[in-house]
Length: 385
Ligand SMILES: *Cc1c(COP(=O)(O)O)cnc(C)c1O
Image (tube, rainbow, N blue to C red; front, side, top):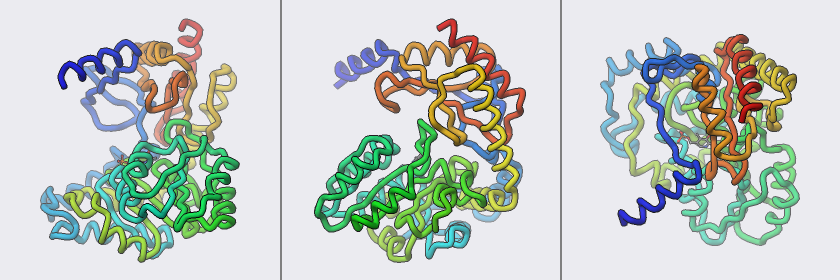
């Protein structure tokens, strides 16, 4: 065993694929501190700038005062508190669906849905660029799984022609490493034509997209209920932690009864549920955060276009700069680091071979001057490497 692991690690090193963790000495914010140095942070998913918002800390402190920290048990034993329950009700109300169910993480939510609701007579049809948790959930499911090339609707249509009990189209709403959207209107047309169901993972759309922050469906002016299974997380735009699935009561009750990643795990601390509730309220009461984010996205794209930076086709807060080789992506990321700018290089296997990139993420709290500094630095480093 140990020899094999050593060989694998050496291979990874040789391919410039070794990953390293950064240790933050500050909260998750526009500026972060690492090893005594300050960086402007262009790598977090804290799109609305809520992770360090005082309202979330206050909600957490109040809940800790009342409930303590640990939830002490799983939801079905004795770990389901009022904070969890209210959060579920508020989510269902906000989205206009029958029920919502909390999961301790988005990974567990996706895994739970795909492994508990489908059997060998069913077919899961997934975009190749779907999040790892959807792919792994699909692999572990009894159902068969097919994957179509990213956003390729004719490939999807071919796969929809299979005769099975249930066909479920599974897609990210916003693709996490590319920033583009799934073409939900076309997908819904196909799903109707071929009698398929639709699951949307909106980890990067919920709170951000749509006039009121309801996510990718609202962005396309589609009824929320058009997604048979809607999943989103609290760890990104909402500045909290955990995830939920929303939809019909029949869906939610089935997950409560059968999803092993729901049943056999400790409930998130009630104080985290309280923070998520506070985040959900801010999404509704401070729409100006979405506007600030949009202004920053527009400004970034305009400056990047002026400098001919290799942007990808994205209008969201995720603005990847495609660099190709791992070596180049790492070198430019390190160059930015030495200028006080934090942009993590994303390499295979997270993205396809030869498509290493800088994954720039913008938040509502970035200042124009931060964005100017970033674009200048990338343009300069790009010539050197
Ligand atoms: C982050 C993410 C998840 C996982 O959510 P966690 O709560 O971080 O486990 C699932 N799907 C997508 C698309 C994500 O970006």
